[in-house]
Length: 222
Image (cartoon, rainbow, N blue to C red; front, side, top):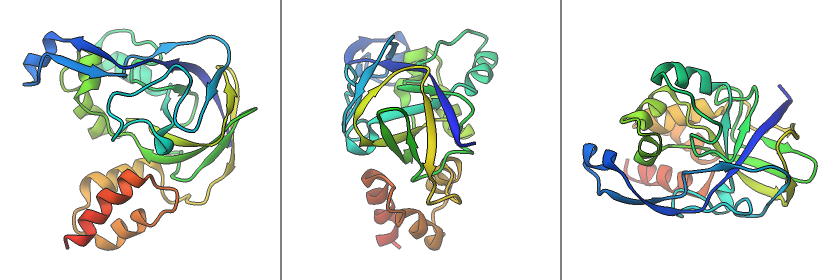
């Protein structure tokens, strides 16, 4: 798999929402998020930190240079639609790029993908929070996504430029073929005392600063 297609591009700005679901999960009814993304036609500019017209409420865990764009596999949608017996449009999982073919088992930390005017580098798996469940009114969805390791993946911008749906992303470099998104996610979530493999993940040069800091805390606490 050396080429994938950007099937759809979504952006959205943070807003404050009121959700009846919030009381069911023990959260405040009022919540702020940029997880609602809407498809756009034509080219959009990808900067160092995000797509034009896109924003995040929680800048610790979303957005910024390490997480300029969130990608999600279109292949997952059918399974989720069958699971919850409802149609889901691209962008329902808060992703910016909905892509063909690729998924967490075929994309690796450090992969470099290029389109006509942009270049991106995969930086970390996406770990969804409760806001995904609220966004789709599906209690527990975020936990199922974590269990199935189908949260998508973030990428940083190496080359800024315009991008649009229908363009092809080509894989030009794969420095860490043994570190798929799926494996990195599993290690991060389940390994507590395998210091060697945690150190190996931490030491990947392309891994996001947020994940590096989290892993370092575990290593220093041994």
